[in-house]
Structure formats: C-alpha cells, structure tokens
Length: 285
Image 1 (tube, rainbow, N blue to C red):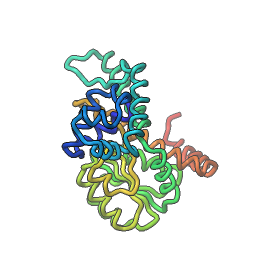
Image 2 (cartoon, one colour):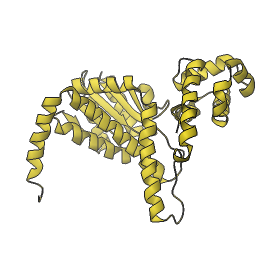
Image 3 (cartoon, one colour):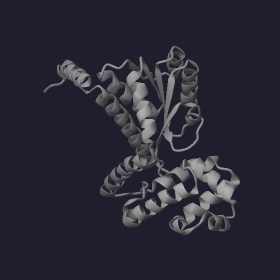
Image 4 (cartoon, rainbow, N blue to C red):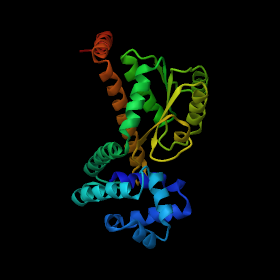
C-alpha cells in the first residue's frame, strides 16, 4: 500500500469534518491528485485551500506540493504492484494453502508498508536514546507484551539493563523509579491501551525519554511520548490484521536493536558470544 494512503487512513479519526472531505476525496480519487492544482482540488472536494494545507500538514507534509509529490510517486508504484498490494483477510473454509499464502503475504506487506511511513529521523533519535540509556523499560499488555518481552531479551543479550514486566502494577511501580537518562518504550498498536498509557505517562513525569510504537497517527500514547515510531495499519477485520501489526512492531524492535548493536559493534559481538556460550549447555546439540 502507498505510504501516503497509509498515513491518511491512520489519522482519519482525528481529522475535522472539513479535513475529512479532503481525505475522502483523495482516498476515492488518488490517481487524479497529481493533475490538480490546490485551487482545483478545493473546488472538487468542497474544502478551502487553507483546509487542504492544514490536512497535508496533519498527514505529515509541509504543504500540498510536498504531499502531491509523494502521492504521485505512490500511484506510480501502485500501477505496477496493485495486484500484490492488498491485505487478504481470513475467510470461512479457506484452504490451508490459501491461508499460508495470505498470512505470509500480509506479514510481508506489513513490514514493507511500515518502512514507507516510519521516520528515519525518529529511528535515529530512538537508537541514540537507547544506546545512551542507563536503563530501559518496555511496556505492553496482551499481544504487545510479547513484543516487549522480545525487546527485553534482545537488549539483555547485549548487556543493556532492560526489563519488561507482565504485571501492569509492577510496570507502574517500575516506571515511577525511572530517572533522567532512562528510556521507556510504550508498545500498543492502537495507542489507546490504558495500562500502557498509565505507565508511560508516569515514566514521562520522571524525566525519562519516552518512545511509542503504535499505528500511524495521533493517539493517547503517541501524543505524550518524546519519540513516535509508527507501523502500518491493514484494512482488515479478523485476527490476520492483528498478526500483521505484531510482525511490523517486532520488525521495529529488530531495527532498534540492530541500530544500537551497530553503534558498538565489537562490544556487541563480545556480549552475544558470551551469552551464546552461556546458553549452549541448555541445548541438546
């Protein structure tokens, strides 16, 4: 899916009624945008030029011209790849071969689409904060806790002081004991998980650097964090959507881990080798 379209769908609920007119027009006629001036766009969608500019900035662009360049590029991509660019949901009685193909393709697309909307600047800032941190807390509940646990395991292996508590009360207590120089990472696809919001808000009050990993757009969690990392949101309804977003979030964790590991490569290699030897005795071969 095109990055510009992912961004629009991600912020749709937070737009004003007039901005939604712009969004709906673009989603209905995306291939026509490249040929429209802002004046013609205003007439077509029934919104003022000022509203169109506000909309473009809400999506993350400097203005209409910047947005038009991006969506034109996206439409060129879709013209070639449109058949392979849609998520497929689970259907009643799907053949196993179909399930294997669809779920695998959904996961691939989730990673690819996330790479189109994630900010390189934000990733660099997050890696810098994690690398310089005294302590890292990963917050997540339900399926997002699995991602937090994966992150904890990875950073633990390179000797970063990290934790990922399953109990939300312990998350809150741990957040309260953070200080400036520490990092807290909130993982919630919706960005609206109350327990995660509570923990990251407390972490924020301590002066710790806060990072969110959520779907694209404004949310209760992303709005209060210092650094926002976004994943794409598939337009499907059943559990295949949740699995795809989980894969995308795990990929973001892998990027952060690789970024930190790369900054101190020799030291990281040493820690990974030491931990590999340490757990070797726990394997049959």
